[in-house]
Image 1 (cartoon, rainbow, N blue to C red):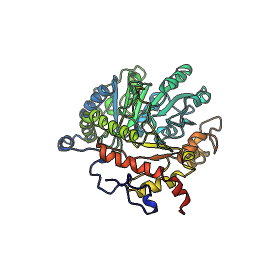
Image 2 (image 1 turned 90 degrees about the horizontal axis):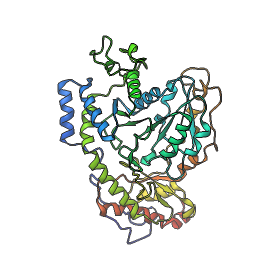
Image 3 (image 1 turned 180 degrees about the horizontal axis):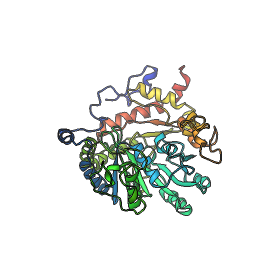
Length: 439
């Protein structure tokens, strides 16, 4: 499998590749079996793709897994985040605070509600929103703080919730990267007012395509239903007469979706989600064992740091979605992360430099008039200019030069995993040669 122990000459400079064998199913995801196929076929053959009975079973099982009272299945994670925002009172003229370093769907649905997005910096090691950069951004317009457990790493939820409670604002956890992860022994997604997440095919918890909202707050759950699940509100021509709405201010409005949206999950996805959820604890336990072993193999390697919570902290990475490593070029003579990744790729390992572009630097967050307001959407409904230019969020801006992707192992196979780790170690140990060689 590997020649890393026999030579230090990187493959990029003419040495032998570290990885030469086919990995087989080491990285295959999702794991789809006959059980998934049968569950989906039952829905298709019964013509129940647009119903609710299978989805409600999935919701009950998801609520049990997360340890919450309520769960709501969505067509996708972006819709789940939109529903969570509206449920939490995000509306025209209000503001949310979110991380600049995240996937766009964490915060951008707020614009369709007429709200303003205020972006905050991240922590350099967790890559999650910096709790110390939240409070000074809160105004009387702030309704919610949306946080991402970025690349699977749990946020500092104690600090975040303390600030939110002090100022009486809601907190929404974007759990799309971290389903099943723990923060000090507690499931992420259950630590705030509600959690919302994607269940698309690339995530660690898969429903084919879909999303999920989880909460202990009955009112938030009902508001999310009222916003985009008209057929579950009980009144009107297009419902079955049964209602999940009991809040007095919502009862007279039953029958039509208040957001003019249809957020229903396709039941073929709900059926797959049920099967995937049954096997999820065992599968992520193996992923965690494999990924931690990979980083244990690289412990002490100059320039490379694990992106994971400290051992024995009670916090875990869940399914390790889209795993990355932290890069310290100053320990490798200033070798750029792009050159490092080029050399690792030459060893036969798929890797790439960088992370999501900080949102505050993107033109959409600077100049786009998405809804025809006659001014940039970023400030269309604000009494101040919240746009931030280069240098305003320095940690988030530095991250693309200080992270790299790593293999996402789905099985614990120590010999194979060690070979991949040795490829990274080999390149790190050849930093001087790579610096000297022409590109």
